[in-house]
Length: 172
Image (cartoon, rainbow, N blue to C red; front, side, top):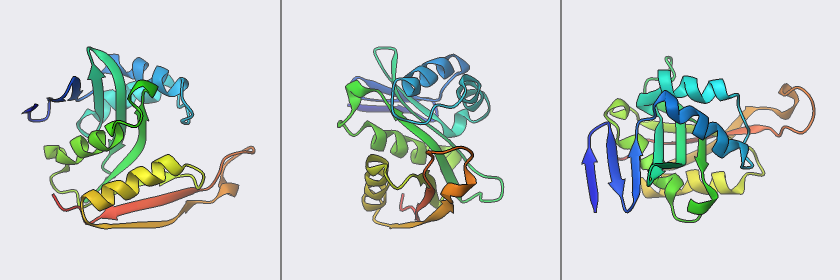
């Protein structure tokens, strides 16, 4: 059963989707810390919950955070939502939660004028590449891939290039 309260929560099965609060930031950080995702500072997650709650989504099962998406609408690209990170707890992998999180984001009133979804993905991140290509197929639209940040821009060693995945125009 899918019940929805605009901008606040929606429930699918036992998963509740809602805007994050600053209290969710630590749980987002913990989820990423225990994954293969790039770990940002705990401050970043708390800040995203405070200042970008309209374009971030958390998924909870029985009150426990099991997934999230952090995103924002760049001031110079009001028709685009940029997805910074998608995190899914191992207990939810393979269940389509990442796609559901992105759909929840795109369905928000805040994204009413959004025509494109963008994200950067490393060349070796097959799961994220598949996720964004699936979103393009779901919305029957294009998925263009281009270089965003070359490997040599990153300090130290071991960070791959980041490719931009641009999906759109989004058919809502």
